[in-house]
Length: 119
Image 1 (cartoon, rainbow, N blue to C red):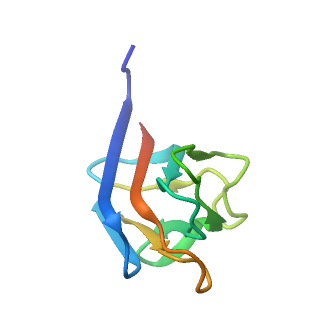
Image 2: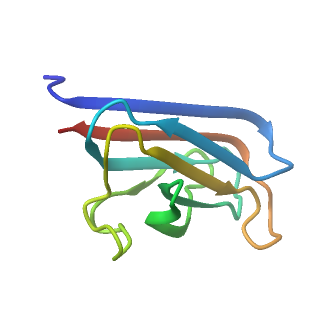
């Protein structure tokens, strides 16, 4: 049953040469239920998530999955500033990928899937 779940999917093919700054304006009140992120290679990429007022409000820098094995982030990973990863209609959600961590191996074929709960 789909219910009040919404899914945002992002894929960037090829080897990244710069950080990604993915933004989405919420069309409803809700919260982030789950994030799955991966590169196709053994990269050092890290992901943060928040809103335009605090870009790491939901998820502090965390290493994404490697070699096509996604890492999952959920309520156990949310930052202490917003343990529900809640947002309001009109908030701009921001997902920032540091493509090579702190100068390590750049991510290839980045994929991220975000599951949102409405309400």
